[in-house]
Each structure stands twice: as structure tokens, then as C-alpha cells.
Image 1: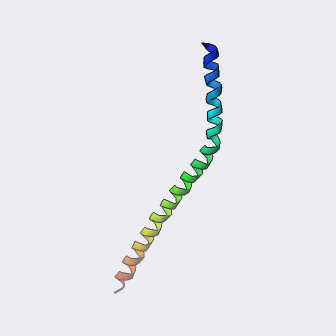
Image 2: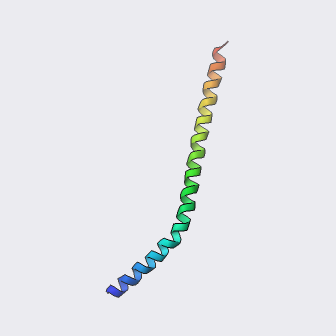
Image 3: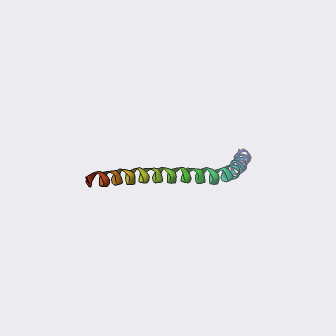
Length: 58
């Protein structure tokens, strides 16, 4: 039984090592996506405030 668990642990460690490479790229892609969303929101807010400011000059 202990031998079977040892084999599962080793196989799990290999799977984890394989996922580690993908984990970095996935995490990096996720961070880039999140940052793009933040910039999009910031850009929309800045545009809206600028439009309000320009309309207020009339």
C-alpha cells in the first residue's frame, strides 16, 4: 500500500512539474489580461470626465 502511494506521489510530482511551466505562462497571461482590463476602464473614465469637462465650458 505504501509503495502504491509512493508511486502516486511521484506521478503527482511529475504532473505538477509539467504544470509549473504552463502555470507561469497562464499566470502571466492572466496578469496581462487583468492589466488590459484596468487600462480599458481607466481610459473610459478619463474619456468620460474629459467629455463632461468640455461640455461644461459651454
